[in-house]
Length: 272
Image (spheres, rainbow, N blue to C red):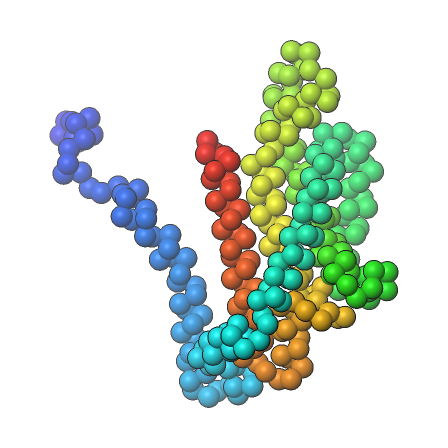
């Protein structure tokens, strides 16, 4: 017991390496994060190599790799990627612009919650693809219809996420502000809003993920550009490697935006 106590106090170099040692901390997340991708790649390779599944339905990884090279070298795929990025970001920013204030008001004012939550709870369960024909009818075949479809898929969910974040702010914060003479407006903008920012950033990170999943739904009908349009076009001509290539492109774009949000969170909320 005495030896162990002295060892802890003195911090001897003979101590066993802790779980947070620099080497382990640096490499372990990347290794663990890569395991699912490696597992899927092995299963995919074995299935394609064995011929158990026809290549029309499951092309080899080499075929998908060649399709990726082809679409970016011999086709105007970069312009389609840019179009899809603009649609997703436009719909996401529009959702955040309206959903975050409504969510915070819903969290702080019970009357607003009584008005907003029933309608949001109803609309958010409606299937977004069902709105595609209406959006085309109302907004035509341009980008506005695609942005509205993605907006409908993220707006109502973001209201509820933001509302939950606002309600999670400890009541003691508001009570302390009230004892100092703060008004409801001061509490909302100087207490609830700053305390909710980290959670709101996490909600935005989740919402933009949904925006990418609704991209193909938005571009499934009436589109003449975009990654989703390219996927549907490849499916129409049974070019399965290009279908997989488009899915990979959307996945990489989604990972890039997710990484950007993680980096932004670390910069803005170092204290968290």
